[in-house]
Every structure is written in structure tokens, then in C-alpha cells.
Amino acid sequence: MSTTVPFETTLKVRDTCLCLHAQRAARALGRHFDDVLKPAGLTNQQFSLLMALNRPAPPPLGPVAKLLAIDRTTLTAALKPLERRGLVRTDPSPVDGRTRLLLLTQAGRDALATAMPVWRENHAAIEARLKGFDPDMLRAALNVLASI
Image (cartoon, rainbow, N blue to C red; front, side, top):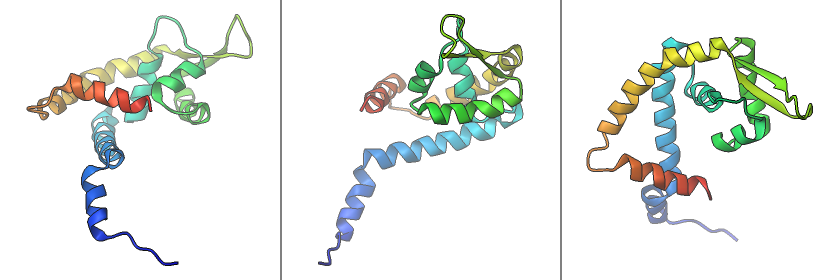
């Protein structure tokens, strides 16, 4: 049985698919922030990960993976280069030695401090490009989609 999808359907999906549009926007934003954060020595993923660790108490792996919407294996792989650079340290929990806590080192805090002005400036410029759209409503809509 040979079936085909009409080209009109392809155009409809191209123009309406939320997944496609979200992926395209995420890739464009990711490339942009990779470029602007490069002088700070970070990728956008590393910046987000370091920010996720910038807390009063070191978090375990699970909640950080959930916040970043990645699995624990992917998070562990993303941590390795940051650990090698001395930006992050992984220690066993004093309460439960089987649980690993993720600590942002002073070098990691310094890297975030270097990256923050770049992030602020570029983030503000991107929000300014959203004329006629409410960035808070966009974030709320993306959070709904992230919970699917």
C-alpha cells in the first residue's frame, strides 16, 4: 500500500506546528546565546546549568535535571566539562551518601558574574524585539508546553 501526504498538508504543518516553531525559536536563541556568551567561556546550556546551581544550598541531581527538562544521564554528561574546569563540584550528601549534591564553586560563581552583564543586555534586546507581544505571557505559554 502506497500512501502520500499532500504537499498542502506539509505547508499546514510547517505553518502551524507548535513543536516545529518552538524548536526553531529554541535553536535560534541557543545559537545567539552561544555566540554572545563565548567570551565568558560558556555555552548557553552551561550558563543555564550554572544558574540552576546558583542557590543557597547545593541541590541534588534530580531537581536540577527536572528544572532543565533533561534526564539525569544528560545532566551528568553536561556536568563533566564544568567539573574539569573547576566550575562545579559533585559531593556526596552528608545525609545520604548515595545522593550527589551539585556545588557551584567560586570559579563557577565568577563565571556567572562575568556572563551576567552579557546575558542581561542580550536578553533585554531580545525582549525589545517582541514588540506587541507580552514576554511574560510568552514565558507562561512556554511553561504550559514544558509541562506536557
